Amino acid sequence: MPETQYNFEEYDGKSKQAEQPFITILSNGDRMNFNHATFDLLGQPGAVKLLFDKRNVAIGLRAASDEEQHTYQIVKQPRAASYYVSARGFIRYYEIDHKVSRRYPVKMVGDVLVVELRGAFEEVGLTNSKPKTAGEMLMDSAKLLLTSVQRTQNLNVMNEARSFQQLIEEHQMTQEEIARQTGIQQSAVAERLFLLKLPMEVQELIEDGKLSLGHAVALRKLTPEQTIILATRSINEGWSTMRMREAANQLKGVNEND
Image 1: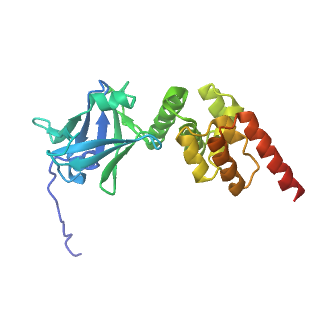
Image 2 (image 1 turned 135 degrees about the vertical axis):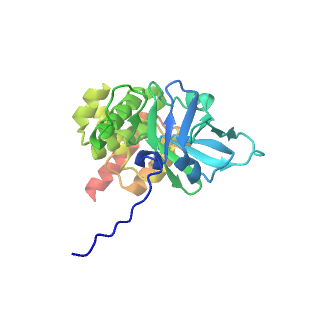
Image 3 (image 1 turned 180 degrees about the vertical axis):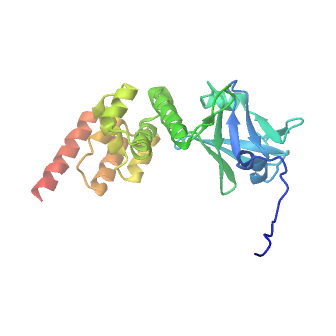
């Protein structure tokens, strides 16, 4: 028999988890920690700009020079291959949940490092706890999403609609289950999901607060073109919800006769 040939590599003390880029939002809400893999993704800058996407509920970090305004210094932690950014004001301004420390995976989109707060995460800093499975992390994500929806003052109706859709698609929840978990009536859940079927131009009007939920719901059963026309007219002419319903009903009657 031929002699087995071995090709050993020396273990350098790293863990597979440590090689994956992540950001941890600490429970004290003072800063965001990240590992060397994340620092490398950013290009090892001395500072970053902190960004927030309200529509997708995501944090963004963009590498910046020290000379730019509104930047945050990256600090290397002593005796550790990790870094942090002081972000107390940022975390509180956008009301980012920090009741417990949470570790999120990150990705680069263009020149921005993205942290999806509605995505999977792992609670860290807990004693005597086993690593969480992918299913448990997904459940944590669902709970966080439900908590965000329950705090309706932090979400406009379009964000609520996207959150409900995410619960349905990623967590297989029904409208009835969402209503029960959030305390929102099932009809209200259905109304918000309807908004996602509207033309993007109309969704943006709702997002910007120019068109109310009541006005938008009146646009059911209209064609995309009719929806855009009525939404625009209602804003320009200051229509009430009742006036919107009347105009929409007139068009629906025309559609049915056709």
